[in-house]
Length: 280
Image (tube, rainbow, N blue to C red; front, side, top):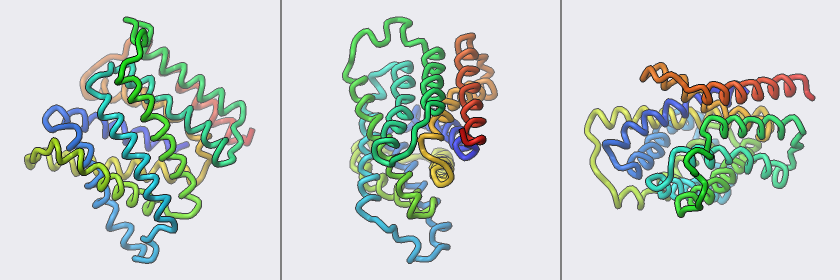
């Protein structure tokens, strides 16, 4: 659980920085450089393992995971300009539901009633926060919504493959090859919109590479020590970290519905953590 909490904090800070940089550089360029620099960040620790350990035991599975993750990124970036924040948040948080279903079908994990309850209650907390019924957000299914719906199972497939790989590979090797494959497959999209970052932007992008690589490393460490289905309710805490970051950086006081939804998410996550610790 603590590894997933660290993952959420790291990715929340990363997304805030990437959102800021994307106002100055094209998002496709920012996304590609994040993964390229993340791969470079992971090279030194992996090289210390030796060239033999650096080679994955399953090149085809690593490549397939890179394809799934890149496919999800392409659909996500394509949808970004034409969807609302509520749609982006709600559909993005459907990924844990796909992961839990995939963990049962493909990994043979036992999805207990407590895990399903924590995930569903956590998702309910997200809905309370974003209130998609306000303004008729989902009154019509747009192309952007369809693109987001297509990205969710692709990202889920990527994380399910990561869980399987943790049974055979060290976490840092998995992160390195994920970033390497995404960098290669995402390159054509970045070249179309390429602009040269200035020195300050390069510093922020290097930080994004560090945060992204660290976040994926923590994710894989969590997958090493626990069932992937047991970690998914923690994902909904990202809304809590985002609200706290907004308050710390911009003095934004969360609205009442945000506080209520955040408390629902926090309580459901702590309840599941206690159940898992007891082995029930």
